[in-house]
Amino acid sequence: MKKTLILFLCLVSTILMAETRQIAKPAFGAAFNVEITPLPNQPDCRGFAFKFPSAITTDFPINNTVPGEIYFPLNAKPDRQLPAVQIFHTIGPDKFQLEKKICQLLAKDGIVAAYFQMPYFGQRGGLLGPLTILRTEEAFFQGLEQMRADIIRLTDILLSFPEVNPNKLGAAGISLGALATANAAYIDRRIQRGLMIIGGGSLPDILATNTNETRDLLAFFTRDDKQQQEELYKKLAKYDPINLTEPLSVLAKNKKFAMINAQNDNVFPPKCSQMLADKIGCPIKWYPDVDHYSFSHKLPDAVTDLRLFFRQDLPKPTK
Image (cartoon, rainbow, N blue to C red; front, side, top):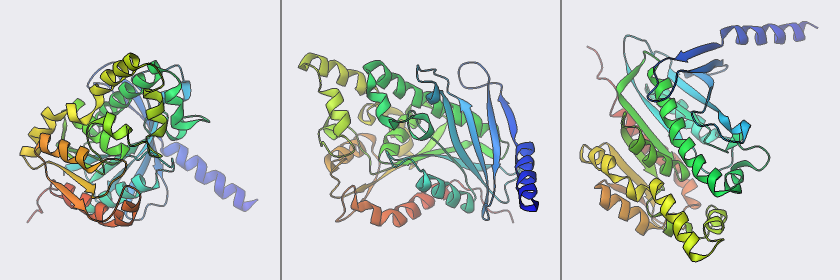
């Protein structure tokens, strides 16, 4: 009985601490609310779960609420603004433990960090998960637009915190998250630093690898006659990093955009990564003797590289 009472009081305490915040002047569209709830047991940072309505409403209701988490350094204060980074997740599995850990490490470094579940992933995908996006052509491309709209809304949310420096916003992601990073830097010019990890450009060539990650997408894009395939690929070009290089190249010129890739990547062919880097004019750090899957052995090193890249935006120590 005593244990039950303690658990109940803890639950009530958490509920009371939850906040509904209005984003009164978003980058586009009408004002919206975000629900923010403290996360317990965060020894090295302060964590909060959040959820907000997507700016784009699909015919799949569970997909229209965007959950995520945001982490602050323990010493974050409104009078000392800090850089903030959006971390975009991989294609699976949908536990988001890697993204959560990266955000926590960045917060430990003194950087505000957040991730959200992209359309049809995690809680947003129902029983079929991300495959739900492939049910129709309209659903697929609406999902890509929804991803972009959700990115912009997360920037709005980050900027609602006085601890966040509006001139030090970044984005980073691994694999699928790398593609989202390129789209984020393209669609939301408030983002001023980006890092793509095991990603690239030329999506038709990437889909043609026909690997575990691309097989369902390749089947989706090649299921109809050749003319229809060409039409689908034309629509996809709008989201292909190889066609989003104008703002990315400006960031690269200022040493604020970079790539990390696997030398033997079998999902994102090295030629696709090099082609994108050449077009942007950004550096690539190649991890030798690993492919897309064995790159997991290099993740600790890659995460260290990511932390060093974004630490460059930390405020100078006060004397």
